[in-house]
Length: 180
Ligand code: IMP
Ligand code: MG
Image 1: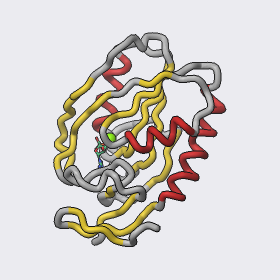
Image 2 (image 1 turned 135 degrees about the vertical axis):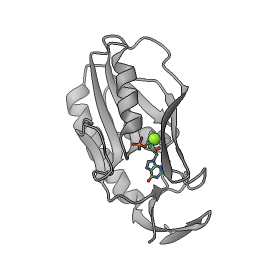
Image 3 (image 1 turned 45 degrees about the vertical axis):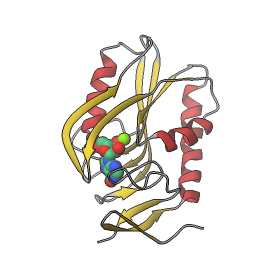
């Protein structure tokens, strides 16, 4: 059973999206993506760290053959985007001519994703799609592909299910929102 409230560092958070809601939406997304990608043998590219938990559940909801490749990008300090994208783990292997499915935990400003899409395009893949569990529509500053979005959420900070607040909160099985 989930707790209604958690305290992380100096801030109070309130339950926002439960593990059951995440699970059923993830299965729906897996089903939708599977209709399109069967036989195409795409490469999933989860962007670490935040997306590791969603990626693990999402790829299991997909029923086609695929490859996995991980990249690590850092752009956040505390609750604010730093505005600079720092690749801490980059491409390995050849993605030329392959179908790419980028897996994200959340699209906030969209800066990270935009930079990563540009980087990916340089490697001449056959196509690029984005699957993101969360999207903050009021915060996005770029034209981002929004075909596969789990939940559209208000512009407030969230933690849990892979998302952290300064290193804490990642392992919570549910998603919590900053209580204001
Ligand atoms: P963006 O570049 O502003 O779209 O945000 C990039 C990354 O910042 C996301 O992939 C997350 O890892 C992290 N992030 C953005 N918003 C939140 C939030 O509300 N909680 C925790 N992490 C977040
Ligand atoms: Mg992320």
